[in-house]
Amino acid sequence: MDLNLPVAENKIKFLYSFIIFTTFLQLHVFIFTLVTMLNVRMKVMVFRIDLPGPTLWIMVMIFATSQLFIMLPMNNFAAFYMIICRHLQLLIKSFSKHLEEIPDSEYEKVLIDYMSIRKFVLKMDNEMSFLVSTSTLYSACTMYFGMSVIMHPEEYIDLCQFLAVLSLFIGSSAAFLGLTVAGSLIHESCSNLWLQAHKCLSSKSEVTNFQQRFLSIVEKNLFVTVWKILPITRSFIFAAAGTVFTYCIALDSIQSLKNVSLMWSYIE
Image 1: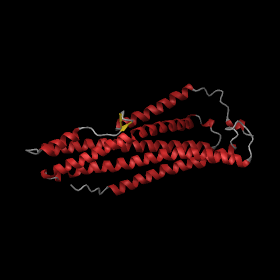
Image 2: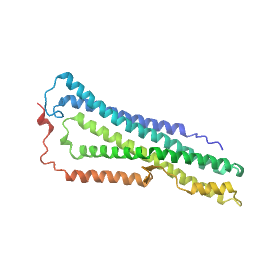
Image 3: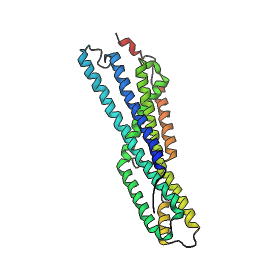
């Protein structure tokens, strides 16, 4: 069975463009954070202690660089995960397209090929499901900061700080949506493969043992998970996004902002 992917190149290019976009947003966060911290000269963050210029520069660079080294690995993992899931989705989709053309004598090879894909997906999920959960938690935290920009812009001292948080919110939210959508496509492709296999084999008067085994294995759900607990499906995306935004609003309502003074008052 020839599993060529004629449509993969264009759609993978779109995926690469999406990844570059989210990465540039993380770099924008670094630049805006650097400018903001230079504007306030780190006085608020070091308890208004006057420090020499070189020391301030070193502290600003250490803080901004540390923040970048936290954000970029999260974004790069989401990009890596999206690329793997996209290739797997296209490969499974290729099975569906070629099922009607496969002669009965080649179903043994089809079964072996599909079992290899299934084993790879399960192994990938075993090794990456915990990282998916940490990426989801990181995205939830950045979404909270983004919601705070929308609900309380008065807490931000200047435009650069506002843009830093907004860029972080957009980039992390886009990476989270891309990661979960790519994961859900594996489940949807396997469901479509089962429907196509059932359609092709039900029309045959006789079904071989390999065809029966292939149909029974394809019938089993195949999906990636969040920490081996929650399967990543389309419903998970809406549930996770809704839960995050609900908790953001709930936590914000608990906070008392009446006694919060503007940070401008701490800057000479």
